[in-house]
Image (cartoon, one colour):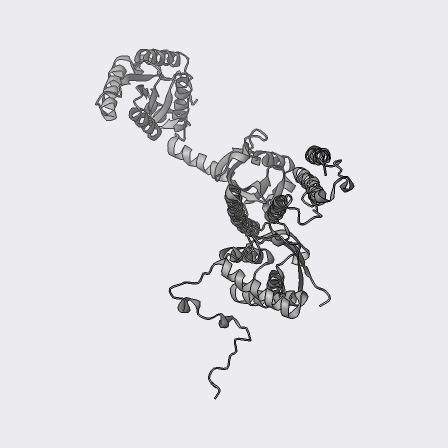
Length: 422
Length: 179
């Protein structure tokens, strides 16, 4: 072969090599154009082109995420690392599928930082899953407990005469027999009670509530009812629910009112009694509230009782009370012909002035003309910052009152006697 | 005169035939270089192939691998666990014993069809390329392990091998319904 031929062969092979690298799909080498001694080189270069084509196709498939691409020439050394990568990716795809179905037992090894991150992720997922399962179990158990408690509540509810309602936010879930009977026989009242039981901000209430309501806005004084409600929040099937135990407290309230009146009211005049006045004064004293204490002593009550009978005496007292009602403060009957007014929001002068006005009015316009109607009074400012005890004030006011009486009480001889009974 | 007290033959394999290695190799320990393992394997391959022909020699290796797989599974693995756990356990065991890095690529029909790879394989990784796959022993080994666990016979075929130009060995394991 001469030098010219060598140059031609070199050109052919160079062009083929160039095409193999940059245009491998179309690179073509005709072995017939090569002399014998270049045949083996030519065949090798053809194999190289074939492997490069396959390597490009394999890397392209991998870059597109195609893990099923099959390499035909298993001896292709360029493709071997890609096949290893393909295998690794297939394995990771399988691992991920395993994790998706809840298998956290698989581990990724020998992939550097990726192995560590992947295994850590798997471990954390497993821990979270375990925690979730445990949490679910607790919730499950709690639900069963709650359901049992609910059934027990329903069973117990039928052994009581109190009304029991179980309500979620949007529905009435249960009412026991007394409650059902109440709703049947008192439709309007029943509706009102159910509305009242729908607690405001139900979602926010998590502790037992004991509260009251009455139905006086719906009914008159005689027919209104007082109810005390115990509301227990529970969760039923993840839904906030309340068990309301409704107690009709109407009779108890009436009894309480009666007891209160017995304890603190004067049965004849209906005003407060001495016990209540003492309680109130003590409270004010303890709380540092100054007040004016006035003693009032009705004139000639004994005379009225002895002369016209006790009924007239009672009427006389009632009349005094009517007049005294205009005086600001708490009017109390201390017993017999003695009254007391205590008022925290006034001055001594104002209170005395008012009492004097009332006394004069009563003297002038009182019903009985057969004896001089009237009362004596005296007041004192009780200063809570003083060290004086209430008893000492009482003595002071009492003395002042008797001084007033001595000075101002009209005598019987001044008037002519009339027997009103005839 | 024959020793009537010792009736076991080294020609019949059982797990205890592996001996007490710790005691026997008190100073040298339990490990040996991969080169020595391969020296035994490929010299044996050479002799068996020469004596029996390549096909028969491959079959002998496959059978030996199968026996090894069965015994390996029975003696070193917990066979009473779920498939996923078993796979994870096998993976760890092969890694710990430095046999190879097992990775599952595909598992279908409750494990009846499995494609897996073994990289850094004890038998072939680093071998010079040839135009043949060589891990016949591994084929048998894997089929023995899978059968010990599932009680189903497996056909295991090596489809990629280091010795055949790949960087990992890939095996397709399928339950043999004809058995």
